Image (cartoon, rainbow, N blue to C red):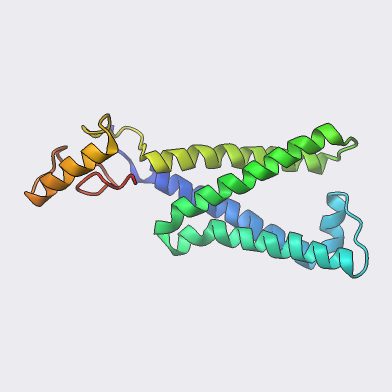
Length: 183
């Protein structure tokens, strides 16, 4: 089965990061423009000066910054691994501490449960996409050297490329002629 471009892990990863990045960017802007509304939805009381400043900084500035990190592969396609890894690490921390909070506190609003579900969803998808991206797993595409150690497939592929051919035949879509794109 051929690797269809709309369903490649790289395209899926970019689409996922685009959606997550836009969500964070919009959330950061919303928190910055309407801090009373957004803080009330998660149970924060804003105190003049220090509370407002912290909310603007963390929920405005940090959310916008995270959105830009997740959107970066739209600008520079080669940085997709960094953005996926960042998404995975950040949401691992969010899920861990959200889970701890469920054991330590009570009286949660619906918004808190919704945020937890979104954080878990983003964590699971970022983990799957990060692993697939790092391993070069592309649905329906098997290269002859997939079961060999990475150093072996790269060395053999480079030798074949130097002589004008590839040991695995035609390279899979999105891979180099040497098959060494999985570093």
